[in-house]
Image (cartoon, rainbow, N blue to C red; front, side, top):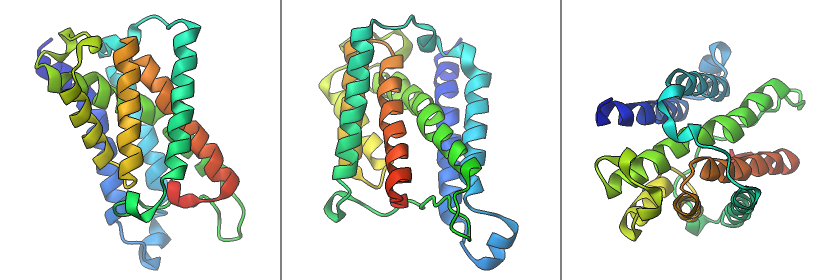
Length: 224
């Protein structure tokens, strides 16, 4: 399979995800629009579409066919994910934030919780996004910055330059740029250390799952 094909299967799910993000941000939240389209449904459709794309390309993701790591490495990945979570909620400050992402408030007009929306949001946040983003950011882009034939590159040989560029670009995807930068560096380090993409996926999933539970407990919807 050509390098372009290997790159494409890692880029397309991410590109579709970003297209949905842009659509959600641009769709005007006017009463006329809301009568025919609940903007919150964008998050649900996004999770389903990206999940289907990953399933279609699954056999092409050789790095996801690696064996499970020892419990020590999994524990490290979980702890790293929790560290990023605490950093994320601590750096919600104006000086560490650029712009604002669309908020996802799963409450109905009567104040009750729409648990179907919540379930799909948590599914997307903790299961779909970590796989999709780590395939793009760590498996593809981090290694691609280091070497054109990224699949042939041992993650352990990724240098400082590639780490910093990848983390900076990862930060640009998030309104909380400083938290995003730190998260990118942490996930990079986990991947480089373990040479197994499942480890930054576990870290990323831990961060997002903890964040989702915290958001539901505190109702601070701006983090969504």
